[in-house]
Image 1: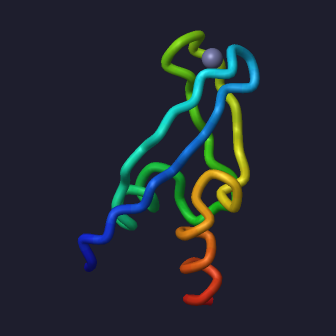
Image 2: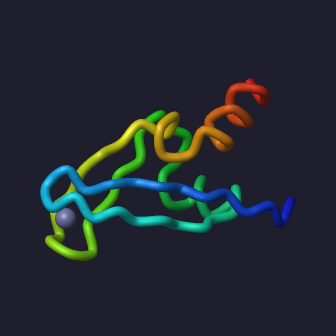
Image 3: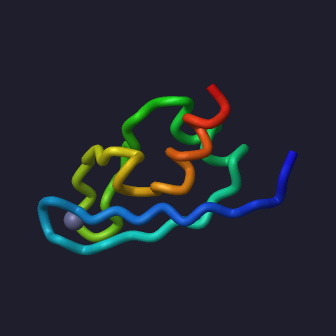
Amino acid sequence: MSGKVYTIKTACPQCGCSAVSHLTADEIREKFGDVPNVEMECSECLAKYTTDMKTACPEWDKECKMRQ
Ligand SMILES: [Zn+2]
């Protein structure tokens, strides 16, 4: 278990507001699972949208691929 924190950046396609989450690897797995897409809910307009993990958090995406 590592304490490394990943930054996940997303932007709402509906209102354009961006969200930044700081999550550890365990939190990412718990929240999103090992999927290529992140499911987010906008805190402003409550729209649900998905973003490529590649785009939202390139660092996490890279480490996932290295582990496989
Ligand atoms: Zn929004």
